[in-house]
Image (cartoon, rainbow, N blue to C red):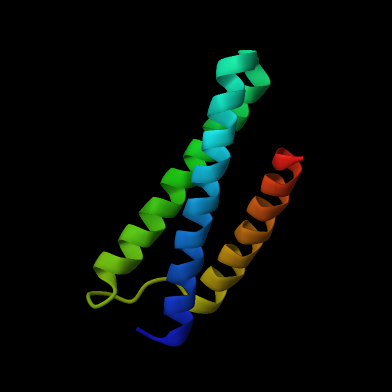
Length: 94
């Protein structure tokens, strides 16, 4: 595993943790407010969590078997997702 692939895997794991934090906050909000907006945010965070779990699983289990996607493009994707998740988390926690 190259350093770039390890960074991709680490960022995917970080994004999964950020999505879990968001899902927890949105779950608490939805229990109190019962609005469609909070349910939509909860579903968004849940899908994001599943997406990152699949990326981590696929990267971890298939790293020695086959050639995956371009690590550079995956890094850009993970960095953008990290920035978006952090921005959403900061806005949510205010």
